[in-house]
Image 1 (cartoon, one colour):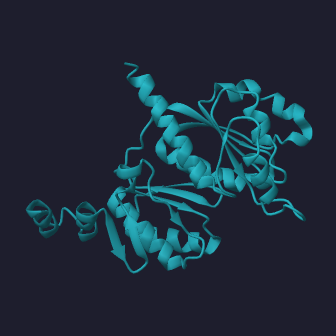
Image 2: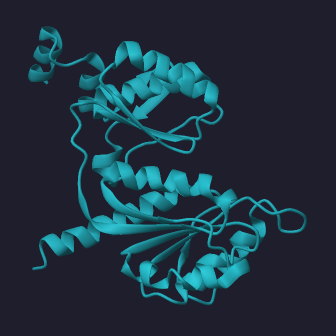
Image 3: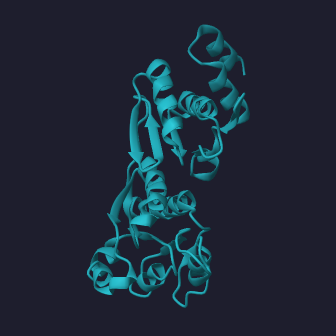
Length: 255
């Protein structure tokens, strides 16, 4: 405790960093940021921008950068992104930004991104599924996992799926995003011995639209795979990252 107080007093530690050390989270006007989540769970807290004011998104991102040297944001609007970039230019001018669709990873120069000896394959059935896959990808990118991305290979033209089977088999874990009837994850899971995480996407229309048919189809799959909620790209990316880290540990220390 005394060392923390002395560090705050001499300016080498900010009050937010000290609060994160003491409680695991930082409380601000935009809410509480869970700075200890990565150490506790293995996956950092992401800032869900959807439903938040641009100023709230910016405040949470700055807290994340101050306490963990990076901010992981999902479902950013153009307006939120513009306000965030303008604020960061003043408060954190040395950061780097990596975009994946409407997801964003911001890192300070002090952060050394980890490296994981495992590959996550990310697959989409169609163009409409790519935004959800982008969210999964940004989580894997943050974790330092190798990513092999394959887009637009839905089962309406099965040849384009079968053409990629050898590539799927080389991955250590697969995330497969599909809307409409959600058949692609089931098909792929029946062709590989790789763990498959199915992500139903809220595309389609009429009966079973908005991801309902895709979710039901994946849950009823007769091939072995796991399924996350509709549009839950972040969750899929987090699950794949945890699996990839376990594989990395086994390769690094096989005994």
